[in-house]
Length: 161
Image (cartoon, rainbow, N blue to C red; front, side, top):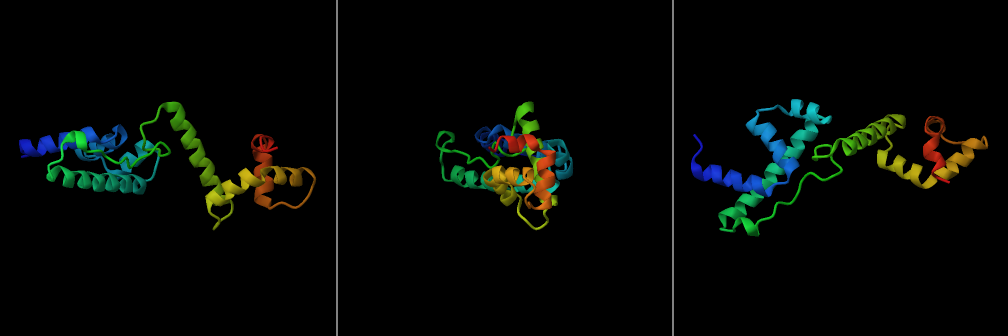
């Protein structure tokens, strides 16, 4: 049986947390959802959800130390764990769909050239896209992945130059 003092501490702690983080903890501990089910709900892996929940709990423990030192609710601030770039954030539907599309694009890039970090490929597309466009259109050599990527995504390359 949870005593009143513990219930008040949890209530105080939950009021300090951002909505998306509070929602994750509620799903996990009040609704007894598994990490796998939570991951399915958000469209991410169960490991991603578990990692986020662990970071949120670590932040909760940090806040609890300050509560133990007698700080009041007005003096306490929770440092957000989940940011707006995360699928776990409380997004509107349009923003969420955009993030899912970006995630799928990164997944394709990861499979395209094994062993090359996705952020490097994104950097190359951003900074060298116009030169690749020129090379492909003029029959010059370009890595086969980028040639194929160009033909499938011409609209992205049109913005480059």
